[in-house]
Image (cartoon, rainbow, N blue to C red):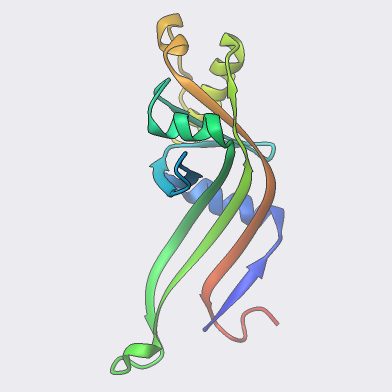
Length: 159
């Protein structure tokens, strides 16, 4: 089994679409890493996230808008020999995206972003009250850099 890098846009998007959460990594004001699981939406190379209007992660992003977003799916324990511990491997596919967060303030743009987020989880149409839209922080992350890897691929799978 080996690790294979992919750059096929359709494959990358299919991995993102299979995920129900992503993990975001930011840097705190005292230069420490801070990682959180979050719900997300993805559309046209932009990742949308939402949160409370304030808190630790918002403080981090106000001081440093750089963000790393990781998606991981298709987790499966595999081995080459059941008695050899070092032959075990967790097979998976992952996408790592880098960008800078900007916050969306305009009400209609926030509704569009909320619909993109909800589309990740449901095909239903949703309505959002003005107070709910005003009280949510919408993050917009245009993807600057993206990588994709498949861990535990068979050696002869990608010649």
